[in-house]
Amino acid sequence: MSLALSLALSMMVSAPAPELIVDVDFNDEVMIRPEPITEAQVERLVRDLHAAGATTLLVRMGYLGYLPYRTKLSYPVGFDAEHARRHPYGRDLPPGELEEFIKTRQAANERYRKVIETFNPPEVFIRVGHELGMKVIMWIDIFDDMYSGHRSKFLDENPHCQWTARDGKTHFQGLVSYAWPESRAFRVAQAKELLDLGADGIHCSTSAHCRHLPNVRESDAYGFEQPVVDEFRKRYGVDIRTAADFDKEAWHAIKGEFMNQLYRDLAAVCRERKKELWIGLQLGPYTQLSADPHFSTNVVARYRNLWKPLVDEKIADAFIVGDYEICASPTHAYWTTKALDPPPSGDLFAWAAAQYQPYCRGKTRLYLFSEWLPGPPAALDADLAAWAKRVLDNGFDGIDMHEAANFEQTPGGMVILKRLDDRLDGKAGGALK
Image 1 (cartoon, rainbow, N blue to C red):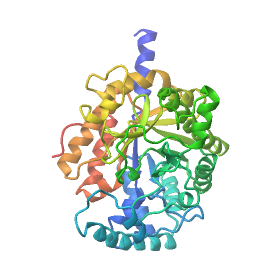
Image 2 (image 1 turned 180 degrees about the vertical axis):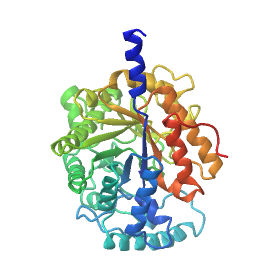
Image 3 (image 1 turned 180 degrees about the horizontal axis):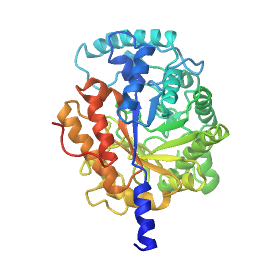
Image 4 (image 1 turned 30 degrees about the vertical axis):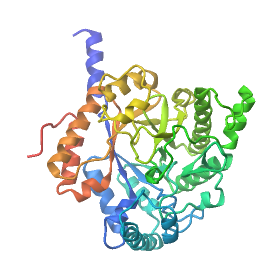
């Protein structure tokens, strides 16, 4: 055997299997139970996920504006019925639907309050995960800070720190703008609290439930916060709030630069503690937020994805690509607004591999996002087989399975999750018998 062939075979044998990450939406863990979730139930969940092959947990530490752990950065978890009536979650709701929502949420949030009085959720996930040799990353929703009846202490105190329309007054409710230094400072403070509890890192997700709230139907309606206006005027001598026309791509890039500053600030606190920073990365040149409906061509806010500096400056340890998008549905109208270059030819996973892997290899890990999983066992197993194939065929470093509750609620769900782990290891295939 030649030396070259021997080395090649050695590399093939030693190549690690793709990483199996499971995200845990702790809010759903509370909601799916009729009684407050206990510390013992959290321990059991972590142990079950570990036994099913998960090596890393992403634990959601945001709740539509509340921070669901012991902190003074947030209001205590609760529900404001009058706020829900002022900010209904949909247009033209059927009679009684909003009031039923309020009744249900009041009961759920009372359970939630009791949970946090009893134990501090992130501490338990971190303790048990570390006992098992798992990595535990805290998942922060950087754009998910309001919903009907749910309020953000930070935004109540800093209402200007939201994406803003050209009038300088109308806000995209709940969508934090990181053009403001106080917004970046708030997220850094949250990250410090979670890292100081022992978390292995911070993940910044682009999930945004506030997009379900009624919104305008005007493209690029928001992004006119004062720091953005000032920066554009300094560079180009144009007031974007009053100009009849201006360079939109330059505007999107300035908004992207402010986002990168947030990531730099977060990376600094992570590096001080020798922890990781993960970043949700939508496909293509923009992170965009379509609204009312959630996935549509009504792109009311967007910024340029300036991802290469995040690699070059060693800011991002990992990207979750296609974060909170519908990459498994490449013909959906949503993608017509994305300006993917080159055109993806119907396979967004192959497109993403070609787009990001050459630049990120050896620098920033690339994980897929599993999207929203079906419930019935056979459908779940078939879907996980498809996701394993996408990871393996395209050489991604792993996958974030969304979310733990799917495997708890589906009969045999943890067994199905273990089959995914086996597939990623090259040990299994086929459908569930």
